[in-house]
Image 1: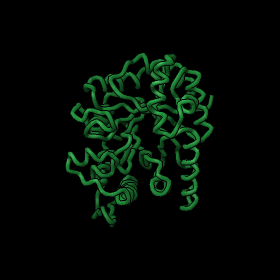
Image 2: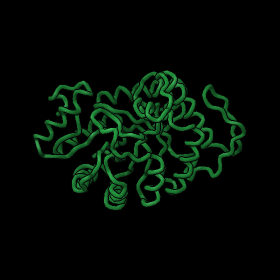
Image 3: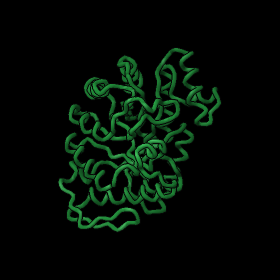
Image 4: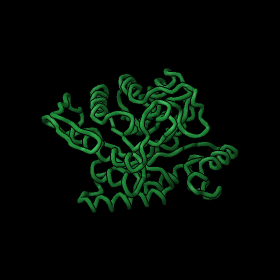
Amino acid sequence: MTKMRFGIQTSLNNVEWREIEDMWKFLDRETKFHSAWTFDHFVPPGPGQDANANCFEGWTALASLAAVTERIRLGCLVTGVTYRHPSVLAKMAATVDHISNGRLSFGIGAAWHEPEHRMYGIDFSPVKERQDRLEEAVHLTKLLFEAEGRVNFEGTYYQLRDAVFVPRCVQKPHPPIMVGGGGEKRTLRTLALYGDVMNVFGTPDVVRKKIAAMEAHCRAVGRDPAEIQRTISATVVVTDNQGLIDRLVGMFGPGQGLTPDEAKKQLPIGPPAHVRSVVERYAEAGVSGIIMQTQGPWKREIYQRINDEVVAAFV
């Protein structure tokens, strides 16, 4: 089998804290998963979610989870650029990198969930401004991560004046910077300019197109595309229950423009052999990592089976 690294994004809503902590300890100690991720939302995101349900904050959760794990890499998939000043976020990231002894991956994106912005009094600017802010924030963060002295920065949205950044990150030159999102005009260009890790959604054919766009941006800015890791986020379900398969592909297929038959073939939902074959197609498209999106509470036996019958085949 082709090598592939697997991660899990654990939701922080509709669960109690101990359930999250226990899941991360399980992933860290009893599986071959390479990474685990929180999310960055203040209320449960997405259609059909109960906005009144409990929802923990992503970075404080990440700091606590870093302290109770030892092996697994970790990150927030992905931090919304609108929620925190990037210099403060960089300081938070360096702190988590120390707590975890150098296991942090730093994920950031343009933010998308307008309802929580409105609830919390956070400005939700038009997409162009959020993309401008994202590019500026990733640039600023990279400067702080790599700084050996004081940092000055004069941007449209962010400014630094003789900023001290100590302690520096444990990882050198810095934790990998993931720029999340597949926008081919702006997001992938920001990645090409300043990022280290790509994370997009879509079928193998869609992802192949996104990778080609990223590589074109790299060539335009004089960067070697091979420097950038290519990862995806996806719903991965291992099951032999045909009724469940039909329900899940009917749920996730239309959002990707897939007919039911196309969804059954292209989504990593089904028996182990089928899921492994879809993973192979992602590898052929150039993907080196898959981050599974999950919703708690978690049944450990489900993820043990994924570990044993899918993840272990690609380690």
